[in-house]
Amino acid sequence: MSTEKKPLRIGVLYENTQMTDLAGLDIIGSMSSKTIDLISGIEPKFEKYKSIATPMEFLYISSTLEPAWTTPEMWVRPTHTYKDAPRDLDFILLGGPDPSKVHPESLEFLREASKQTKVIFTTCTGGMWLAASGVLDGKKATTNRFLIEKSKEFWPNVEWQDQRWVVDAGHFEGAEIWTGGGAGCGIDMVAEYARKNFDKGLVEVSLMGLDFKPEQTHGQFYTEPQAEY
Image (tube, rainbow, N blue to C red; front, side, top):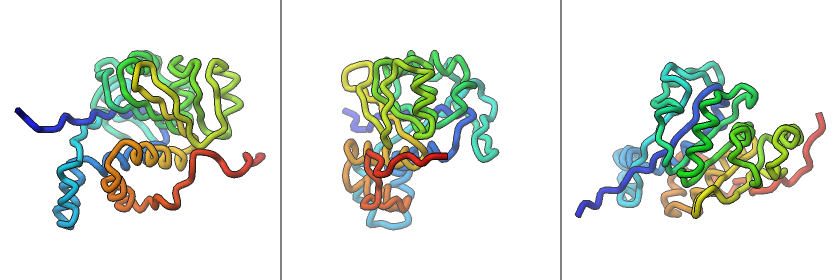
């Protein structure tokens, strides 16, 4: 019997988004078999993590296979389109676009994938993107703090929360939807998910390697009122 681990499949919607909103992706990627193999080749003391690291496959999804724009003036080559990307993924991550300009095919993809993908993460206006698909109707969620009131106007069927991140059930048993505020909130949100779902030592290796200090990570709730501008 084969003991080879099945890769985690991670879909990243990468079209006209904020690059920093996707920074939490590296927390998960730093626990992959490929990364652990790399760092253990440099520092042998990390060899002990090779048996618990997980192979991962990253799918960068856009409307075409042409290079997709992201901030700051960077272009990324997609691996899949919304039409041909698999719907049954382990994770989907959405950064923040201009929510009024998302591609219609992305909304259809999210509606279909939400019925099969285990965990959906959004950061910043990625929450508004997911709301536009209808996936967040009846769910608790958040987005960039400055845009919560605007989100209530456009998507009143979502229970918008003024929190750094919000967790709610997905659309089938065991599925989850994690929505975060701005980019910093998204990093802390993914770190929290990792702590709850991956080996503790492996998570610490990932966070230390990225110099994200767990003891300094902000919690789920804001500790100060929203500033007025």
